Length: 142
Image (cartoon, rainbow, N blue to C red; front, top):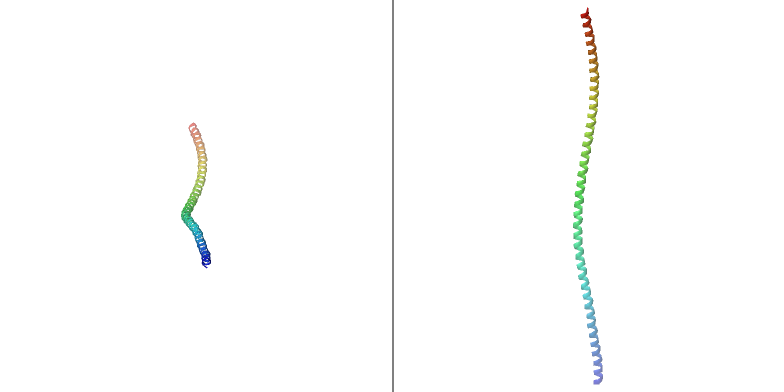
């Protein structure tokens, strides 16, 4: 009976020890899996943190570029306004120059007409002087 009891106890003890060993092995496997998962979580958290920093930098850069684009739009508008003003002034200057050229031409025509009239008056005067001189010579001779 004792040998049978010992055999049963030995078998039950072996099973208990075997189950305890399996539980320890399972526990070790689960611990290893948990450590792997914890490392994976840490790696993903670090990656997430890096992505957040990169997102902040990109958001800041986008804001800078937006401000720069707005400034350039304003500068372009100022340049266009200045170009329009210069174009207006150029056209006014060209109109003034054309008017002045027209007036100069009119004045030249007037001067030429006056010179022709002066020459005619001189010729008439010279003719009168010659007639007067010839008349005075005739009067002296008579």
